Amino acid sequence: MVKTITAAHGSAEARSCDLADAAAFAQLVEDVASAHGRLDILVNNAGITRDGLILRMSDEDFDTVLSVNLRSCFAGCRAASRHMLRGKWGRIVNVGSVSGISGNAGQANYAAAKAGVIGLTKTIAQELGSKGITANVIAPGFISTDMTDALPQMVKDKAIEHIPVRRFGTPDDIASACAFISSDEAGYLTGHVLVVDGGMTM
Image (cartoon, rainbow, N blue to C red; front, top):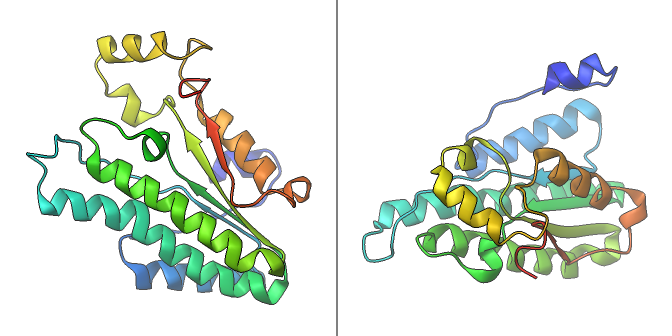
């Protein structure tokens, strides 16, 4: 990604972090803000799955998914909002999922985490809106990624039957939504869940 951005004459850097470690994530935010003098936009896009029916789901699989998908989101928002308050401007974009809206069999942990992201984001929007900071959720449907590429073709074909645009989304579809929510033009948009799913859940 860094090479792509720099090849297009942009500026970018990559840093690694275990997002399940709240202290490490907070330190990463501090380091980035310190290096650049401010922090304006946070996009929380971490996500893992440990799928299984609830009767067979272990406590460990439930807790691990919530730790990465929800708790890290909280840690990032808390750390970033401090810097945004100083700058009196900010955009928080948390990537959820349609599973967090409608649920999904075999994903009790994932759906619970993504539903939590929605509640967390709406709360942040209420707390920080008067300070020039917005907080919104992008809820993707099926997106062509390594995660969905691993699905059996029969499952993918069945899913596409329920998507009016008859295809999976692309990472660019999500990036475009993210770019808009992060822009000045979206200054009056906060506490919103933007579903980007090709019409699957309408």
